[in-house]
Length: 105
Image (cartoon, rainbow, N blue to C red; front, top):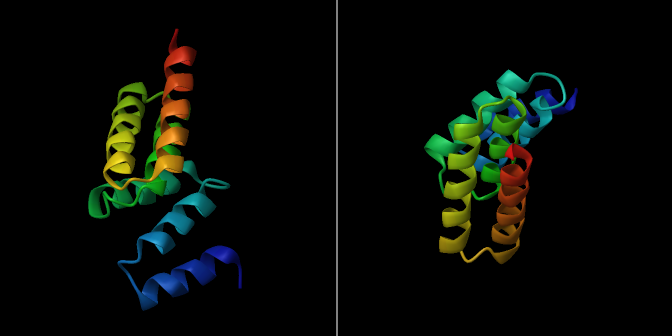
């Protein structure tokens, strides 16, 4: 059984587990970015407090040239990480957002 098959088995057991959805999205980054984006967007919509999603979703939007979505996702992630008092995620998001802005110049 490959990793994705295992993750989908976990998802069957708990279809609302944000960590499993996140793991599926991250696994898809290796082979199918559109499917990865679908799962990241599902997380952003259904689990907006799952801080880990924002960095990867924003980076993927940026990689796809969807700069407005990337910017909005970075900003929202910074807000969510501040509200969750997640200093590490907040620092990473702010750094990645600044890099994103620098790359646009």
